[in-house]
Length: 268
Image 1 (cartoon, rainbow, N blue to C red):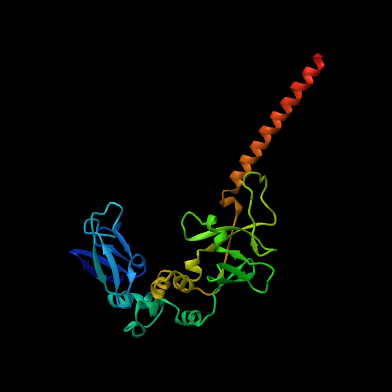
Image 2 (tube, rainbow, N blue to C red):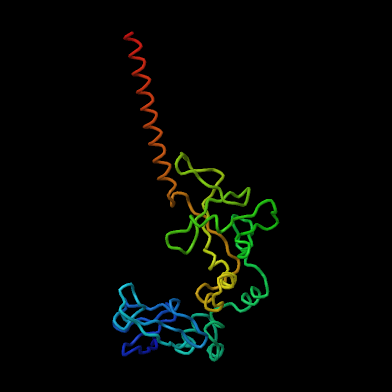
């Protein structure tokens, strides 16, 4: 039998508490979803900016909103939290959402100074917010991958970077999109998360943000591995195609000029 999900009422409107989706969903209107990650976590509750007209977060055209306090999921649906995180119900009762959702051992290690590590094509890199870089382990010949260098490589979804990575030098290599005519053999397209996801603790400290709230929005991970991306998924094939067409046009243009000169010479 399917479990009956609990509901809460906000300003006269009923919402279903969906732990699996980590959201409030308007009863009878499943398209109206309020994600908990969009609320400000305050430890014993969440702060929701609620648009009375839209019955959701304030939008661009919002004419006004009110602040609403929402109880934590561990109180609203302890059974759902136990099921989602593989815990007994007694392990949920009395705990905050932060204590349940965040790996506490990993969190304490980070607070004590251990830097997060991400593996890029088999080589570990330390995520160093203060040094503005991903520092390759045991390679002091390079500064690694500096975040200020890859700002232009952020993916359209703002959740990750797609960077041209040179594994020999453990650094990025710029690609001249105006001249490239083939897929590079020694440079690879690699996906890494944005800094707040790689190291939410360091990111929060550096920007003066609330650490628990930042970690709640960007859960800590161990054994992070950068994803390899096929160049075919990127802009590069299109740039190569355009450059080859440009070369072909220039070649024909130059050939045409030589023919004209030759013909003129024959007439002489």
